[in-house]
Image 1 (tube, rainbow over the protein chains, first blue to last red):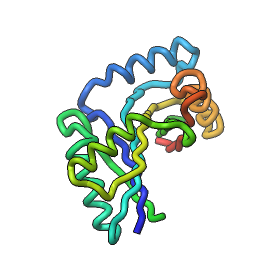
Image 2: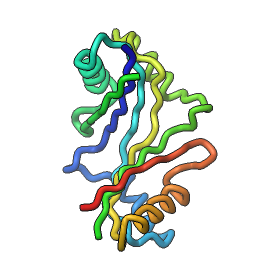
Image 3: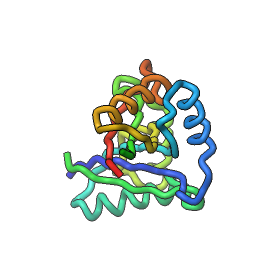
Amino acid sequence: MKYTAHINIMPHKELLDPQGKAVSNSLHNLGLSQVHDVRIGKHVTLHLEAANEAEANSLTTEACKKLLANGVMESFEFSLTAN
Amino acid sequence: MKYTAHINIMPHKELLDPQGKAVSNSLHNLGLSQVHDVRIGKHVTLHLEAANEAEANSLTTEACKKLLANGVMESFEFSLTAN
């Protein structure tokens, strides 16, 4: 079966996110002072072939751990949809 | 009220995504040959104060259009949760 994985990779909550801080300041300068606590990470979508959802799950986890996310600084979460 | 916006910013479907292509090739080299069509974008979370969900919606759209997403190359979508 074919699955689509939607993966979010974000900096750990305990870590400073300088990119998010810069964007937050820029939004304030643009007049959007209601916005705060901006955090910026990556969104990855990928298609994969797997026998079932459990296999798709383990393949996606493997891809995240081996390549997509840096476990020291980032955490990941994902959802799978069957096509 | 306080809202959290979860924003996904992805390269337009019609555009090549060289970063995604590179990741796809690397995953194949790591033995994950079942994976294809990798696309990489940004995931942004932000907190905002708004009177109601409609206002939160328009503030988030404004932030995306003014700063977060480049309309020429990227499209965005978001969901809001009330805290």
